[in-house]
Image (cartoon, rainbow, N blue to C red):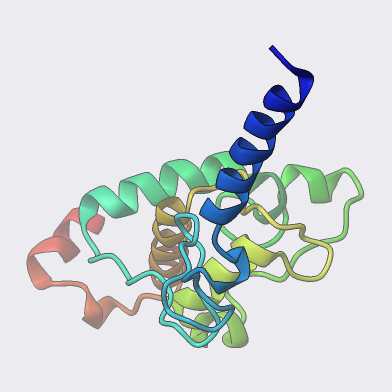
Length: 163
């Protein structure tokens, strides 16, 4: 067997491989602004609507209260007045949830603050799941309402239980 025959086979195989390759730059692929891009769960593209607001239920409020006590009370206190244990030890006081500006804020504001942080508060996005952020926001709104309820807003059959 001659040496030239082995080189011919190798050249033939190489030629077959090269001819079988397509131009890879001509493949179908999503562009940066096409709608075909796959995003991780919880990521919202610019301009898209964020996670829908969950319905307000007793279970959502209970979950929100539980998560609020875990993540929020060290600074904000159980009443949401901004006088938590960390503040009593010298950390800057966060604003009270009961000031007019925050009482007028929609639940989305609190979800955004939990997600992104605000002022000296850092982001809790990696600690608090998106569904729990909504639960905490619902609990904050209930807490605000509880501290500013007027007697005429309480159903008559429940007013007796308060006395």
